[in-house]
Length: 230
Image (cartoon, rainbow, N blue to C red; front, side, top):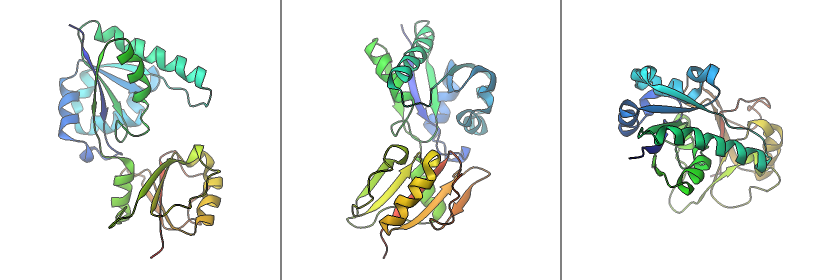
């Protein structure tokens, strides 16, 4: 029988925020797939989070799945196909593969691209939720994301810097770092109350309470919450 591929969210950064199910599946898995290159897998953020809760991961077979961070869809699709084939080699041996991913496995998750190819090739794929980064960021800021009938808009800011934040409710801006200067201009124009968490729930977590506090060179793991002023 072929193995099962699991996309497992390990949460935003603090190993204590991993789910019991994620811990169990990592313990039981034959193979752990890690986003990154072979030489630095144990330095990958997802691996370090998982290792904090499941030391046994060090005894597992680790396989690197490399992702290109470019907007050329043809190039990224080819890389995703290669990643899926690597996982399929182990599934064909009857081994279960757990792909560990930051945050939740269903929100802008790199594993979803592999999932399309795996399922098209006839393999069984199962997703396991983790605490989303924006929920953890809201807790770090000690605020609610929504109240009463407020809507919430989750957008990949790197791809939406030309669209005004003019809808009612709360905006969550993910993937902002590479375009932070443009994103900050967008936030100022919105008139909303803005807060940001960099490296949420990690040792080097930083909180910014206004647009002007957010550095233009904020790190990759920066998440912004923009709420309507009360």
